[in-house]
Image 1 (spheres, rainbow, N blue to C red):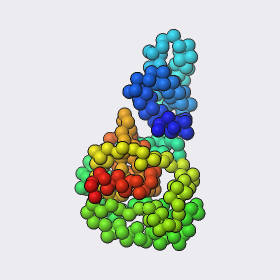
Image 2: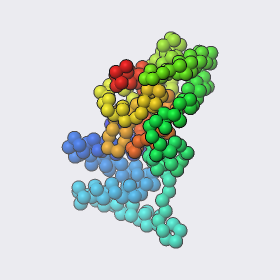
Image 3: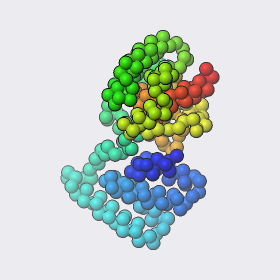
Image 4: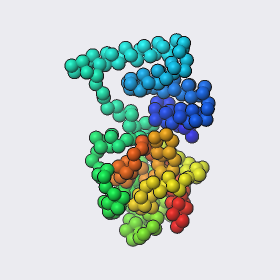
Length: 290
């Protein structure tokens, strides 16, 4: 999967890191070194010199006579020295690079540190019960999704508004572990759009990342790492962990409140993926034996 992702988004450093880690665990040394070299080059292009330095130093340990790596390492050190000289009082400066947060359009990767700096959210010390209480009745992103669908003429406004009213009613009346209703699923079920065409239209216009979740053997324990107020009530499910990155599938990538809550709860880098709503609903039903 990450071979495909990095081919489509060759500057996605987070996915390159995960791919390198996967090759390492498989014992594929040549592939590991090739990805490490590519990763170092991308870090250089993005101006993330400290990260590039680490990659080139690791490469040099593997092959101390590699002239290309030696030259690249020298260039990184030179640029780092220039950066330090430009810093106030001779101190090195650290710049926040948006490329370290967003890769490949809608493929959002963030950490607790960037979240706390970039947007106010729910306190990281809050319990799961407090999260559930604060999330109850909060904006679920369906209005934003509805606007997106109509503005990009993917679905007629009449159909979207009818589906939106039905979803609001269902979710308002939802009790216990009843799975939340999805706007996309409602539109598809009503026969207003072909599923593949609708998902492709969203991906083409938004550049969100997509995951064929039906191909995954999802671990129920990973799904349960989030409270039911997010998985069952907002259709947000973690489905895999690679290194320090957790991959999460959503039916509505516009649910900013839910995504903020996820990041506050989990001490992982997060990689978001749009998935088929019916598959997410099935995974949740299987996980909680509904």
